[in-house]
Length: 51
Image 1 (cartoon, one colour):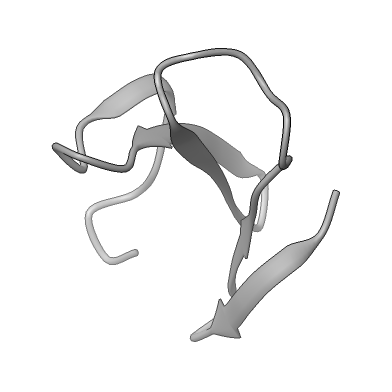
Image 2 (cartoon, one colour):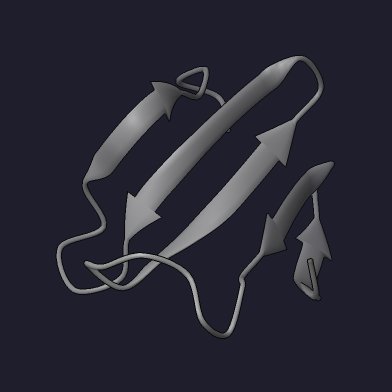
């Protein structure tokens, strides 16, 4: 999976041909989340408030 950005320990990655709706994957330590690109809503998983 291509890495888009790494900042403050958060890794943002995106598949070019993944399922809809358009989203990106975030990893922070043991946490993982899928985030909708349009609304920035966490669609799946969770992230700590600090991240």
